[in-house]
Image 1 (cartoon, rainbow, N blue to C red):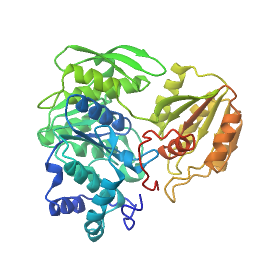
Image 2 (cartoon, helix red, strand yellow):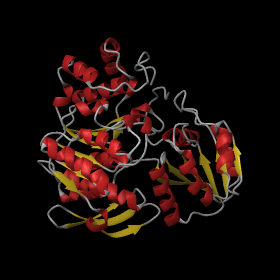
Image 3 (cartoon, helix red, strand yellow):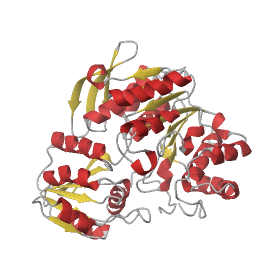
Length: 428
């Protein structure tokens, strides 16, 4: 990553002026293709990747921009389901670097500029763009989408977005644009009122997906989720996603609802094939290696942990179950960890090597606070933590979670990088 924009600061610096100026200087490359924009606290990457999978199967050359990545920076910028080549990214970054430096763009702004430019050079028909943080002042909010979606709102990143759901919802609602239809799966009145107010203010049609009414026939399996979703026209679409959990049925159904709001919606066949073929690793991902069953999930906030607990309950994984967790220091670990510790027979805490500087946690202090009778050990180095976790789970299950950084580090150690063709850009 540092090889692309070595001088770019990593700190959040709110505002869209730098993005607007850079894109104008480049001739507004982000206006050369249609865009779909998704924000929310959890599930936005699942929605964006489902969009891309469907649109690709509908015959459209499709870009996908998500963050953060698991194992390779190139996962962030995909075209037709594959990471953009190392050579393409380096060439584009070399051209963009002087402009990004002159404007003092942050790293995320520079990489967003890179993605929007590369999509134009790759001549995509549509780009599926995931919000990085918040929405209103996020670097991605310079696009003019044909449709947008807001998955849900939960407490996360309070230091940037506000201390209450209402405040956070206001930031998420900032991606709603004049006249652009918006779909949401949020159902709590306090949040919905904020979304409705923003939509009414700018004249954007708001479409609600009500999971308890619009999703039926839910069948949960360890490697797939089957369900039927009621479309805006009242018909039922029977679908299957490889992403496990009821929350992934909601994410897929929201993606479908938003796609049907496009001026040229994808065919039913493309929707079914795209939902079934989506690839979004590290989200309830199950992999067996030898005698061990691994479950990888990037749950990094309370809502994400709650979803993971439900997935594990449906999975009934073989025992013993060992939790291998590494969490960033600014996360709400006091609420995240107890439900997972209660499920485990043994716990190993670690510090992901790829975590951003200054955001590391103190696993020993945390272990003393969350110990509830389950044995907890600390191995600072991820490789040692992985060895210890597997040794404590003979013929059992290792659940790797806590952040994208922890899951990514372990996937790399196990040789399970999700896109093996990815040639290396330095990971951090």
